[in-house]
Image (cartoon, rainbow, N blue to C red; front, top):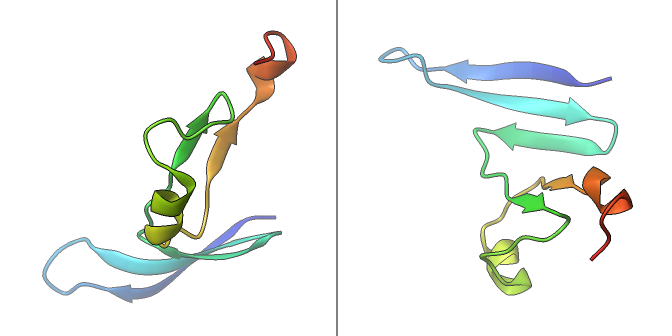
Length: 69
């Protein structure tokens, strides 16, 4: 199950800090989330992705079943 918990709210805006808890671990929010379309991050090298400090990655690989490669 996925849970979201707000840790702190801004008094000046609607900004907030939170934690997204997944079965695989926790992700602090707000977060930069790279998206791997066709299972590949196309505009960044592995080293660049690592330097972002991202704690999570979205990978859409469903369509590879029908059109591999």
